[in-house]
Length: 561
Ligand SMILES: Cc1cc2nc3c(=O)[nH]c(=O)nc-3n(C[C@H](O)[C@H](O)[C@H](O)COP(=O)(O)OP(=O)(O)OC[C@H]3O[C@@H](n4cnc5c(N)ncnc54)[C@H](O)[C@@H]3O)c2cc1C
Image (cartoon, rainbow, N blue to C red; front, side):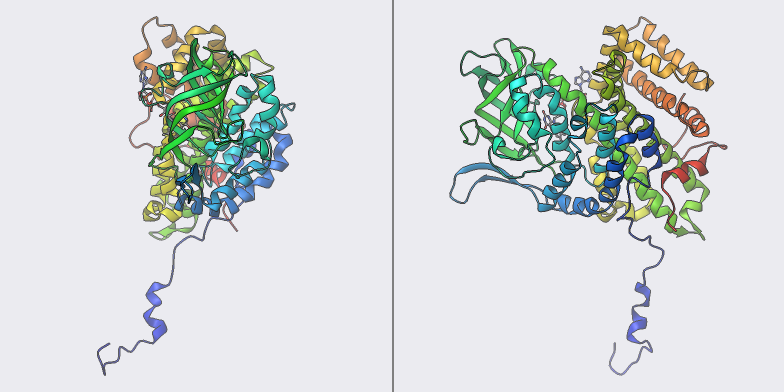
């Protein structure tokens, strides 16, 4: 102020322009399960009701403590420490304490183990899928080791001796972050290393060599020499690795510490500087004679490790559905409080169209995720469900993972500028969104896999069409689409160049058939009308008149009192 001139304002008045108005209250803490009607319905429909107490107990944690930890874990990226203070090679990665706490909570609640600990109960994989879906909303990076640990179990079981030792630790509910040999720990995490520089999709080109230390054969120790271009979560206690034997690719269990207790010869070269997935480390590693046990037969490595890949692909589908759910919740919450042009955003007709459309997409994604989980669950007992799991996992991974980035972007826009700011979580979700479509088989690979499965196995085709046809007779648009899809497969022409178009349509028809069989006929009809046969104009928010917009928004996320 110029000396002697009074502004006439008291000190308090000068800051009156800084009063915060028209901003929503913080979303978290909230109960991520109690507020998620579509998840509850899918869980019950697919046989997970008995696990509801455990899942419900996890809801407030996923929407509470884990939310805060997720921010800290991503603001503090892991650091590679090749040497200790005195120059000894230690190959360690330091994670922020919040990352370890997230791992501890996830493992304690059975995110990687619930399905195996309750295997005798139908629906155990469905219940685990629900837990993973909740856990993947506040923080996604740590789900990489949790998913891989869950998915490693069927592979470990290929060898009874290794399974007896490793499965109890991989399915433990205790997280043990110590960098010591796996067998001295309460619980273990398991990673995987397939991808090499010269080929990720085409793993037959792997050059890493495996030489037997004795006679060789299943359960025997080999020495691995080569490099891996991507090996995520390098602090896992062991890794399932593909390497070439005399008879072709073999699948190996490579512990971080060798059986003699020394650090195994797995040298981390550097950590990847990734677009997203910041809380998690992904490493390039050199295997300089690392010892590892052969699982399954020499030459059968790809077939052996596929049991793991099938489950990690399922989690890509669940992970993308979870990211979409979290983005939707943020968008609806914001719109419930923010006003513009005299009304709350949630009352603006065009915003309602966008939110309802996002809500429908999210409902369809979770319905498909839990249906795939049920097929996986029933696989050991039911041939048809096994065939469905085989093809529906690839269909779902392709389609839902591809929808995710555009979905998150649309949700961001609902928050306006706030959606572009880190504290809203949406930038993190946006960075994370593409990874599920890339890793564990990119889009084209999924689509080619679907065509291969359908052409090679009549049972797979039958299982897929049975599933879609079980919704026949309710919606004419869907009925005709299923017929057309069958016709395209029978056309006799090479359909490889059009694989994406066909698989996308299969995904939508599968989702539609699930919604048609649920209790919401208006929602199912709206899905068929808006998704089948092409959509006009903008990506989301293009419902024509008559769509069940109110119902969809009500179901998306409840209004607080
Ligand atoms: C964050 C992150 C973490 C990862 N963690 C791991 C890990 O822990 N362990 C691990 O083993 N790997 C990991 N990966 C690697 C990942 O699985 C591979 O990047 C992926 O499988 C693709 O392999 P690639 O990069 O070699 O691409 P390529 O195989 O070269 O594929 C490039 C493109 O070509 C397409 N393509 C390939 N073949 C065909 C075809 N026949 N017809 C049409 N299109 C085709 C693919 O769909 C893809 O779009 C990770 C990747 C990322 C991004």
